[in-house]
Image 1: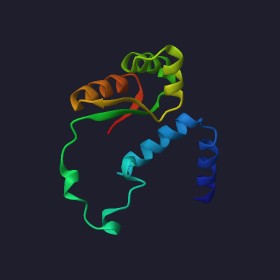
Image 2: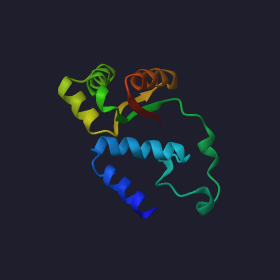
Image 3: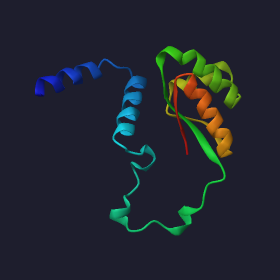
Image 4: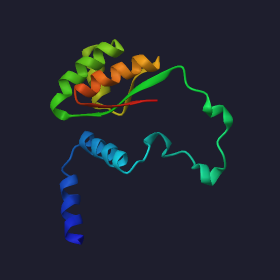
Length: 127
């Protein structure tokens, strides 16, 4: 098994930063981990959560986590139209993923934009 792990490690080291990020997101999904809470103390360590957190958010943020390298241009064009950016700024935003695409959206609008971006091969979070 050590040889198998070593070969896997060598293959992972050939990935670029975006592919490593996409791999990380996929592994966390499959393990049932939520990236939004990775730095937060667990409820078991810190006691019960405050009752205020039960209130549903009225606005959310749209965050680009990663994208399929084959669909990079399509994702850049969509991010450009969503965020109202120039081509250079949209390209920089996509290439520097994870990055915040748009803030203070209605949950319905965020879900629509998320679906559009995911159709194009992007990995998106709504928070």
